[in-house]
Image (cartoon, rainbow, N blue to C red; front, side, top):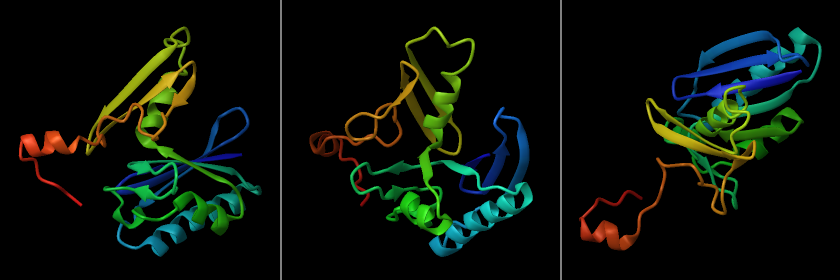
Length: 174
C-alpha cells in the first residue's frame, strides 16, 4: 500500500493506493501551521488511521511547498512556517517507524506530468505551477533533476547576487 500526502498551507490531503495504483482511501484535514509537534502528530494520526483501516503499513511519500536543504535536510517552508528549520523527513521516519520520502510539490507535479502518454517520448519536461506561490520542476530522462544545490527547476526560490541586490537597492529578508 502506498500513502501519498499533498501538504499545503491550508490542508493536508492523504490518499492510499493499492498495488495497481487504485485509490482506496482519502482523508483531508486542516494543516497545523503554527506548531511543529502538532504537525507531526497530525501526520502520525492520519498514517495510524490508514494502517488500521487497511490492515497494513503503507509506504509514505509527501509533496509539500518549500525546499529541503540537500546538506542539512532542513526544511524552508513559507506556507507551513512550523516546518522551517526542522528535518521533517528524519523526524517523521522516527515517529512512524518507516522511511518517509519528501519532495517539493511542484517537482512532484513535474514528475507526474513527465509520466503521461503525451510526454513519454520527451527527454526533458519542465513543469510550472502558479497559485498561492509559484514553483517548478525539471525532469530529465524520466528522473527528477535537482542539481548540485537542490534547486534545479525551482524558479521561485532562486537566490540573486549581492551585486544585483545592491545595484537595484532590493530589500534583504533574513
